[in-house]
Image (cartoon, rainbow, N blue to C red; front, side, top):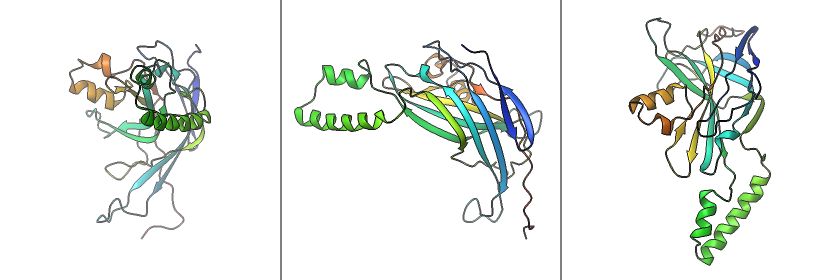
Length: 247
């Protein structure tokens, strides 16, 4: 297990350094491994409208990042797929008395689990075989899936992203996101099992809200272990000045 590395976060011309914590899953007890961030934030003003009847202009943030992560410990015999995502988290207001946080997903990915002899589909076919017509149809689909799966990396939980453009540009409900302070980037995930409840990674507002709504009674069931991949706070850069002023 490697020590926590110091990673470089680039915000325009400002260098911000952050560390990452090791991520552990309660059931497996293994760590996420080395995770590296390299971020470029580009703020620009949209010339369109948030919706058809709106006349105001909004500011949008576009983020590119590098990420190395090992999520293989999230996969076991009962894992159907893992939904991993990166979100930007920042205080909703600048008021010190407010603890509200805004979280917006900038990138996501679904990682399906490879089938094992102990997985639910394999056990179902073994102990509850279907009719020949159904099995032949199922086997053909399985062969297609197997051939397509062979083209994918064997270690499904290993992520190596370089200059990855965010899938979703983000804005704020106020329409202004430039110069926002104390923002963080967070790596989070959902583990979808074959049997059981959907599980959430800890230390995101989504997980805290779900756990809080249930009074914390089911945290051991629906919240995975670990500290989560969270960067140190950074500030969004200023809005880029266009060549011509907007009328």
